[in-house]
Each structure stands twice: as C-alpha cells, then as structure tokens.
Length: 290
Image (cartoon, rainbow, N blue to C red):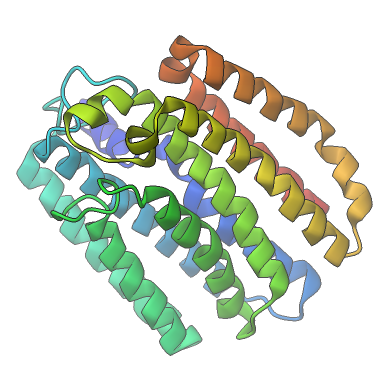
C-alpha cells in the first residue's frame, strides 16, 4: 500500500488541475457556444493532457534530485526519489510507460486534428523532457513561467477547441490566458517556497534572478490578470452580468495574496493546497457560467 501511495504522490495530484482546467473549459465552450463537440475527443484530450503533466512532474522529480535541487530536507511536499521512496530505475521505467501511453492516445488525436495536433503533441513531449532533464533546462534558466503559460494555458485551450471544431476562436485564446495565468501562480508559489534551495542548486528561476519581492509582484499580477481576461470573455459571450458571481472568489484571491506574501509558514505548508482549491473553484464557476 505504501508503494501505491508513493506512486500517487509522484504524479503530484495537487497540481493536476493545471492540465485539467484548460481542457475542461475549452470543451465546455465548444459544447455550449459552437455546434462542435465529441465526447470521445474530450476524454482523449483530457487523458493526454493529464498524462503529459504527470510525465513532466515525474521527470522533474527525478532530475531535480540528480541536479541537487531536491534533497531529503527540502521544504514543501516530499519528492519521491530524493526521499528514497522510489528508485531511479523504477521512475525511469514509469517515464517510458507514460510516454508510450501518451503517444498511443496521441495517434487518435492526430487522426482527428491533423498536423497541427501532431506538432502540439510532439513539442509537448519534447518540452516535458527539456523542462528539467537537460543541461539547458527550461526550469533552470528562468523560462518556467513562459512554458507553463504557453503549454498549460494557450496551447491546451486552443488545441482543445481546435480538436473539437477544426476552427480557431478568440474565446479559446481568452480561456488560455485565464488558465495560463492561474497555472503560473502554482509555479510562482513553488519557486517562492524553494528559492533558497534553488539558489544553492544554481536553478536560476526568475525569483532567484530578480528576488523574492519580484516573485511576490509576479504572483499578484498572475492572480489578478485572469479577471480582466474573464470580463472580456464573458462580454464576448454576452454574459457580462456573471462577473458579479466572482466577488467571493475575488476576496479569496486577496486573502491568498496577503497570506502568501506575508506568512512564510503558510507559503511552505498550505499555500499550494489553497491555491489548488482556488483554481478549481475558478474553473468550476466559469464552467457553470458557460
């Protein structure tokens, strides 16, 4: 049973909302506001997106340990390889299996979506590996936020809508901006928490490069910006009155800003959980508004 728990934790389930949110919202937009929606495509897209994020997380767990960024004494959630709960060869085998499963599902999606989906799929797999596994890793050179915004925001939502409709919609771009900003918040919280360990491991995140104050400003911008994109989206859909339903969620964001920026223990122990709840709530509310 312990082994199952370790494998589950290796996937970092508390972060999987990052891949689920843009697919769910893009699909809901197609279902409610276009004439295009296929359930089979929805499930295949959702599973592929989740697998790509799990693959990225597992590669990150392994290579952050190999590069010294994760140690048994790190802050935040346990890392399975660093703690010795899972062996390197086991994790490498898991990477191969998940990669193969993703490719198999990808064949179906490419058949449905054509060369654009092939390009998205291949680049997603490539960047899942490049994120931490090479000497020029995305996460180690300050490009993590750009990668998350692009692949767990814009590309995920636009790709989802294109798979369903074979069309590009401005609404999909706005959904991508909303989910991209929210998912960058997850990364910023992790980087704020781990800034000391990242400096020691020469992991040059934007927060290591420009300081903790920069990271706090970055978080504030990324958690507020979705409301501007949301207003544009709801206005475009002739639903601007639904903005009033986000008042409580907006207050929640203010609390998160205050706690994350001023309470180190909250940042270390609770911030990721509350931020995940916040992103889930934002996704669910927008889903209901559609």
